Length: 512
Ligand code: FRU
Image (cartoon, rainbow, N blue to C red; front, side):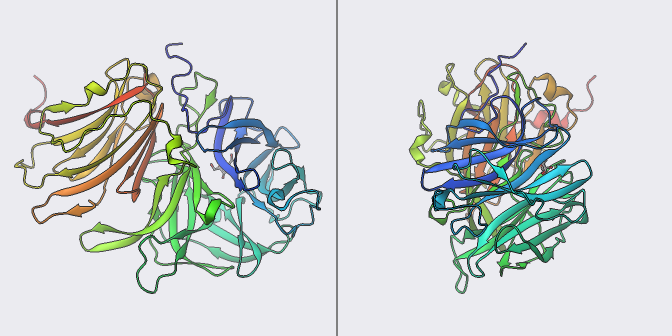
């Protein structure tokens, strides 16, 4: 093979040991063991999606290193799949599955879609060994509406009514259905939620969680509810995308604050987001699958596996300016590690108070030929508002995340005239050059943190690079872009910062 087999595998982002992975499932935190459990859609028999489909299983104490376990739930027959779903901890044994031999923190019930050739039903299974093995409920299914497009139950506990609440997609009717239950076995339909925004081809993986408002206005509650939804295909960038709605929830009905559809992440590789059950200190943390159905089955798989999760992220709500006259309550994200210092930096470089002029590069001295492929960067920068450029000029600066073995780079650029950021993930890899959906370039608008009277614009950016993933968090996570990439040679090793102007290219006609 042309590429080193371990070249792409991320170090801290979860990947399956072998085989195929898609959506995160059953996320929960076992407080009695201080352990995070992540299950995922798993085909151990191939590196493409296919039946029989299992729940793969991994655990972590720090959310950076992962222990792999045997698949936790599998189908009865080879033409069936245990599709996406969630896990709850049934502390009070509402289901009756447990007795005193299982401590309350480990009374684990999984709620998932059983995908059969002619129907999708919602089924449950329980575990008395902390989530490693499961027993299916003998009277499954718990919900059957005789539909082939009815899936992805996410269950939460709603304190005020002391009930279990399920969001589940009636995928091709564009409905998120809300069911309630006292015992996880008997469910009744409480309401339907439909959006007026992007609907795409179908709805998948809905979910409800609460997030803290960082900068509440007077009269605001401490937290608001967030409804997430995955649509595929139908993303404006093509393929899969996660959207969200902020609003109120009363135990039976979700009422959004407005009719807008907002995207969780403006990259190509962030889908099927799910929040953890029982996250520590009532925080809102979750994770998404870092791929896109448009090309997930085709990306390079030299190491015998395909795809990874995003980093685990923490979610808050914040009023953020989205233009000079408006602010909106935005879902903000940052990577969540159990200890900030767990992400060990091999070498640290600091540059302060530097200014960049056109045709200037700095950063090459950072080159690290022994790179592990894992690096991060944090910067605050100001774009000078008084620079004299004409509209015909293309004046840009780029952060180029470079290979340690070739000139290839993944770039985040800023275009001075358009006042917009762009991603350029063009590489030399055969997959990259030939796949019609793995686009190389697109843009993202980020409203500056501040704009001075003279027009200087300030931005903040945190970037996390892990072999074949680039996660960008702008302005303390108010805007994010998550994208995979495949270098033909080498591993990401350093970040160059390059300013350039391409006046000439714009004025030239066709080549002679
Ligand atoms: C979303 C999804 C879910 C389904 C699962 C099957 O990516 O299509 O709707 O449960 O994947 O693997």
